[in-house]
Amino acid sequence: MSFQKQERIIVSDPPTIPGLTFRPFRGTADYPEMLAVIEASKAVDKEEWVTSLEDIERDYRYLRNCDPATDMIFAEIDGKVVGYGRTWWEDERKGDRVFSLFTNHDPDWRGVGIRRTVLRWLETRARAISDEHPTERVEWLQSWASEYEHDAVRLLQLEKYEIVRWEYEMVRNLAEDILPASLPEGIEIRPVADADGERIFAAAYEAFADHWGEADWFSEKNLARWREAPTYNPSLWKVAWDGDEIVGMVLNYVDERENETYARRRGYTETICVRKAWRGRGIAKALITASMKMHKANGMAETAHGVDTQNPTGALQLYEGLGYRSRRTFCTFRKPLRTGKS
Image (cartoon, rainbow, N blue to C red; front, top):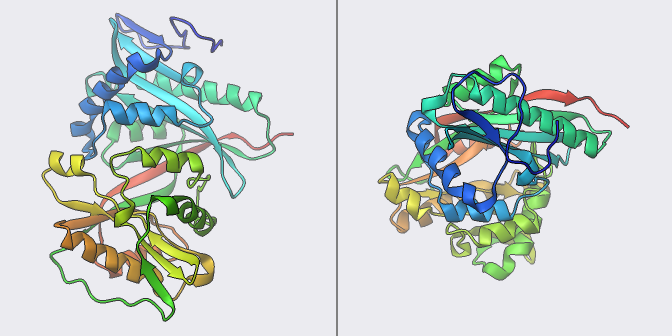
């Protein structure tokens, strides 16, 4: 199968639907089509997040190990995009290579075989990329879905993907009491500025070294992308220091567009981490408590973040002890691509 630039993509065993064709990415002109599919899916999939053309454009400028011209596929019915997908690869810090892939589809055209065709094409593309970049690492195909994305979950299970990880979206009602939590002697929270971003990301890179699936999330490229996003606001960050050493952090943010869209007042307590040498001393608890108090003082009614339910540091138990409760479950699905080669 050729992946050179072309007007049409020929797929294997497509469903018989009048007007159905498949094609590659056409550049920025596709962003409105992608956004339309995303927006059409939210109500059915019970998704509560906000994206815009600017968000898509920014994300695609910062893609890594992915060329949309060859690594994306679009499904059209009589010229209208009804679904699309993309694949890319990353080397995990613990040793495996993961080919991530996703499929977004208009709810009106689910269950008729289009999404399966897109998924299988992405798998074929991932194998081709694997051939182009030989490695001795074990290689996996990977995708994600929430408990409410029934169509995606059903397809992944039919295609022999297995759930390998669970993540909770957790929410904390700030009307409930926030109990005090102190930092250990010698540790203090100091205000930070944009100029501290590289040092903070370097500390996070070290702290997340043993996190499952971590693949250099805290790169200069990802920091540059976040700096362009409307949620970037270092004045909200809570960073703990031991002298001149960054020991832990909560990189808080508020998504004003999301709050307006869903008529809520939520602040996020994300990127919670403590470097290994300083763990077990209550630093994360104190940072999260300080973050909750700050969000409440800023008029937020709740805080939220995601958590790997199998995190070996006991993060889930910590968050539950601080009053966070699970609102939604996300699953990571994998199936083997290759077991390693020379």
